[in-house]
Image (cartoon, rainbow, N blue to C red; front, side):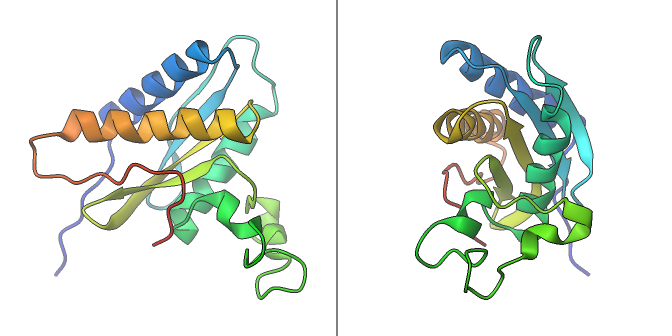
Length: 159
């Protein structure tokens, strides 16, 4: 039987706080959603003034990143992005009742080589969403330092 590492509310809240701090530094209004390994929200915050569409988009990005074990922007990054026209997964964004996000802003949470969740961000441009997402991952890494957990912190994640 395999033991599993589970992302919990405490860690999700730390990740969101770090993403919000980064969003404030770069002057962008974000919605951040941290999901578990099944793609269901553990925690979500929409900054005051952020778009009302942000919560669903952020959840979709987190869901996709956790469920498909890759950063969402990798689906449409040329030339081999699988969701690009003519490539093997073209149309995948219509899966799961349109919940599958194939654009920048979703990152899997990888601990000790295993995907244990995801973080999705909505509100900024691609560069801003990425900066806030990487800040969230770094916060988790910092929080778990010294506890025997290795957290992957990068924008381009594919497991």
